[in-house]
Image (cartoon, rainbow, N blue to C red; front, side, top):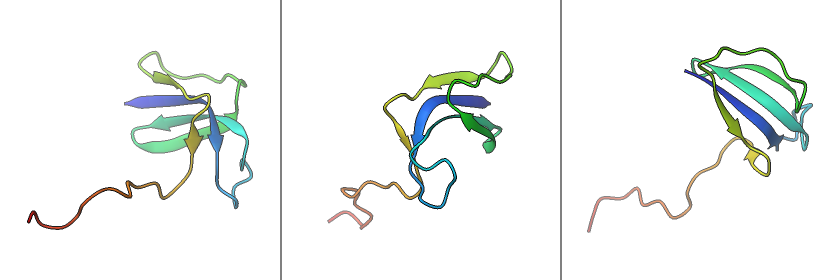
Length: 72
């Protein structure tokens, strides 16, 4: 499955895309292409396009309220 995230803001200080809006193409679970938002680019018809304006991409997100212990 292919996914295109459009206009997502990257938050990663060591990335050249830090605090920039990008279009990110994921093919078969692997990031294949990152380019500045709106540059277009080609992708297959079966690609799911997700409008991510106002959303952020970064590493290490997790739910602080998750409970990993046994019940009780």
